Image (cartoon, rainbow, N blue to C red; front, side, top):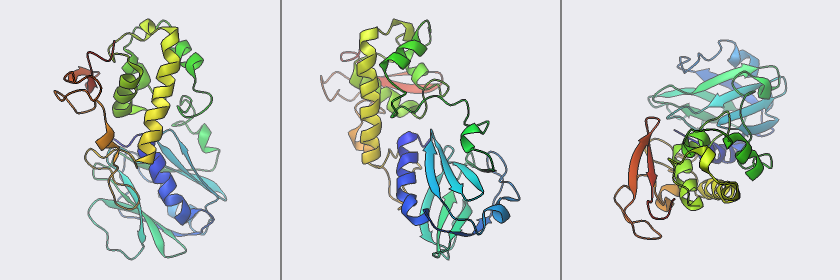
Amino acid sequence: MPELPEVETTRRGIEPAVIARVIDRIVVREPRLRWRVPDELPALAAGQRVQQLRRRAKYLLFDLERGSMILHLGMSGSLRVMPADTPPLPHDHVDIVIETGQCLRYNDPRRFGSLLWTEDDPLTHPLLRMLAPEPLSDDFDAAYLARVAKGRKVAIKQLLMNSQLVVGVGNIYASEALFHAGIRPQRSATRVRRDEFPALVRSIRKVLNAAIRAGGTTLRDYVNPEGMPGYFRQKLFVYERTGEPCRVCHTPIRQIVQGQRSTYFCPQCQK
């Protein structure tokens, strides 16, 4: 599933093509995404200028002159810039056609993504208003993380993947951040010491920023706006490296299952 780095990579990649440009039309080939694309969206968005393109957690917010489009890539979605007359491929569900003749083409084989419309502040939309602080923002610090972890018996990795407490970290980056912080993913959140939280916050930011610089992580489906895979996979320390030697101490990496998701860690480097 595209996480914060993949969505931020997408935002940065498509921003030059859309900012201050007028939407010529929106072509919806398949409206049945996770939630149906509103029938009125093409008529509402056509002729409007894109004033701003923001990211909130894993949502892309296209702020137009009189409303906003809220786009989520789902589990397998991608958004690419290409000439509008490029023949569509299977699973090319939506084109956002720009006045320049280019389009943003939304491809989503599993159709778990979404494209919605609001005329209110999109940050107050039911899907966004309860989201936690951004992990790259000043609101996310050691004091905040210690506060939300206090008294919680859930494993620290599960806490990092709770979007009501931390947004956009996801399975890959939670495993990697905990490795760099030296914390075992199955340790109870309430047993993480107060003096360990600064290192954990730094590790989360370090891993996310490194992934953004590398264009995200491609495991199966993700491609960036140019159609290229993300290269952060080549820099992973533990994720999907079961049995391989730790890049630090050479101990074999272990794999366990937490909350029906695979977790990877080094039994020597992480305590």
